[in-house]
Amino acid sequence: MTYVVTESCVKCKYTDCVDVCPVDCFREGPNFLVIDPDECIDCTLCVAECPVEAIFAEDDVPADQKEFIAINAELCKVWKPIVERKDAPADADEWKDVKDKKGLIER
Image (cartoon, rainbow, N blue to C red; front, side, top):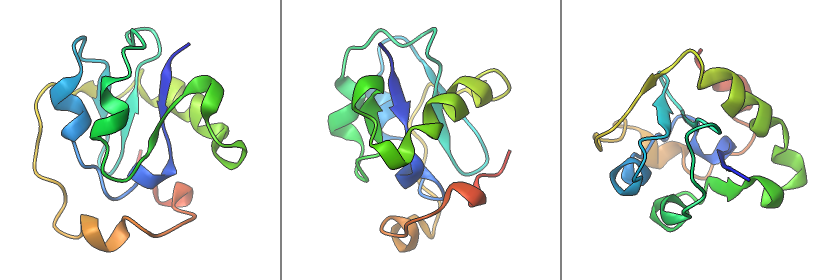
């Protein structure tokens, strides 16, 4: 099992999770983070660190977010690793409670 970043992260991209990851499995896109399922060791450390509760164990991803399992697997192959925490986008707080953001992912 791996962990999956879901829709709540889109346009928020808080990177608190990156700081606690012992294996650097996060990949960074323009406005979203994903987890490389081949690198994730299922340690659960990132889950509690996410301020928008965007990270789930693969088996616990909500039904309406299941497509993010494939999105993480796809984008982790093209996005570069992120290994240090960065400042969130200036408007991240404005986006944290917005729903239906999948179409806003910048690839």
